[in-house]
Length: 313
Ligand SMILES: Nc1ncnc2c1ncn2[C@@H]1O[C@H](COP(=O)(O)OP(=O)(O)OP(=O)(O)O)[C@@H](O)[C@H]1O
Ligand SMILES: [Mg+2]
Image 1 (cartoon, protein in one colour):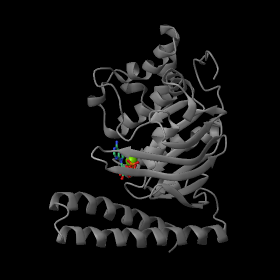
Image 2 (cartoon, helix red, strand yellow):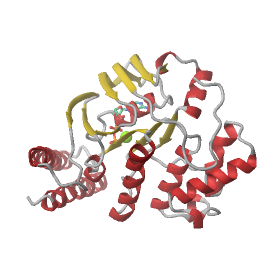
Image 3 (cartoon, protein in one colour):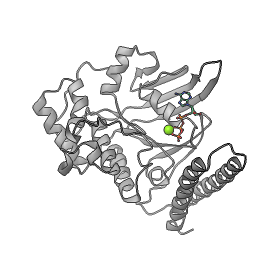
């Protein structure tokens, strides 16, 4: 890893790097001999500058995978190599350096510091990198402008909407100009308008700035805008799809591929709804849990159906 990084006041200098995951295993030990195997020999490769979606059901291992690629969790077995750095072999100290310079991570919960303003939150990673105050503040302002929040600089996270907090989280992730951006379900809590802003920002990082972007989502609005969709199930990558670019005139063959993928996804979600109802009947879940999951799945099905109809189906 490079020793020091000099940040530009405006813009980005560091281009994306490739990320390769081989035979990745993660076992969580729960005590009393109980183990959860969250990743079961997962393989994937993401090219430098590529934007890739990891799509899969709840509990399939998305967060676990991103945490290990991001150096916030360690694998039980297998390897993760990011831009030539053998992440699985790093010491705690080197992992810290790796997280600071190589990775911009947007967590499933935003992870903003509640007592600090948006501006100060964006400054934090640069403080850790030893960037002088004046430069830090200038760059933080530029980043907040990039995400459309220059007028909310002095607001604390609680004084911002969910979508705005998510955009601050992107600015924080980008502060140190990392080559790899990870985002874990970045649009889960957002309405369509805010979700699309986040999607545009994330995909532009790869398109405009050549960053490598890995995003986990159930959200077809994101998935269809990245270069590839990797489908994760039970801790391994089960398949891969090339989504079409919705902004470009759709190519016929690829369009029919996408339609098939969406139809399959709807069918699977409908099966999940059935299973959920069965669980409620069997009293394996409370009515509150049922309601929460049911609403989430229903919203996804509606989203997919809207997408299908926008594709003329
Ligand atoms: N700290 C932990 N200890 C024990 N088991 C865990 C831990 N974190 C995750 N798991 C288990 O590992 C599996 C994968 O979890 P993970 O959070 O990676 O799924 P996910 O795909 O991100 O799900 P979601 O879409 O709900 O966020 C699940 O079965 C989960 O219960
Ligand atoms: Mg998760």
